[in-house]
Amino acid sequence: MRIILCVLFGLTLFSCKQKNTISTAAEKEAIKGVITGETEAYMEKNYEKWASFWDHSEDVLRLDVTKNGFKQSRGWANNGENWGDFFEENPEPITSVFENLNYLILVDASLAWAAFDQIWTTEDGEKTKAKATITLVKKENAWKIISYTAIQYESDAAIEDAMGRE
Image (cartoon, rainbow, N blue to C red):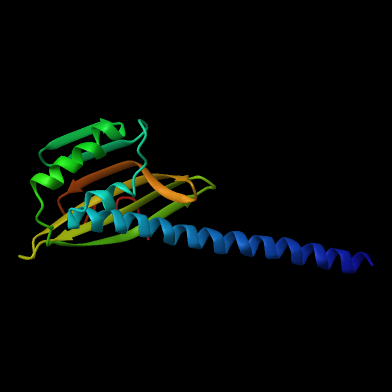
């Protein structure tokens, strides 16, 4: 009888672990979908769609670092609401293509963090590279971006994979 109980306990424990692994894998794919969808909506200059990927609280934080300097802003009013005007003033879709690579995603029940490389390529073949990190919160069963950091850099093989992500 003890052997049967131990086997049943082991199977139950194993099946719970399997469900968690599958759930985590599905969550990671959902997070990649949010990251890609937000970028695609930005490229389309579709404000409503783009804004749907973001949390709209005062906790939103955005940091952009380029060769021209950096800008950090906090709160949806200082981030997302301003982009609506930008999209209206610049309605032409972006024709560059982008690729997200080397994801590292950590997921908990209602908080996730993702780091990845993003490469933009213009129609002329010019490339822009960035290291990006995004923090997401789960609200009403949907992942929303609450923090976004992008750091553009010049390609240098010696430092390009500084984080060693795969």
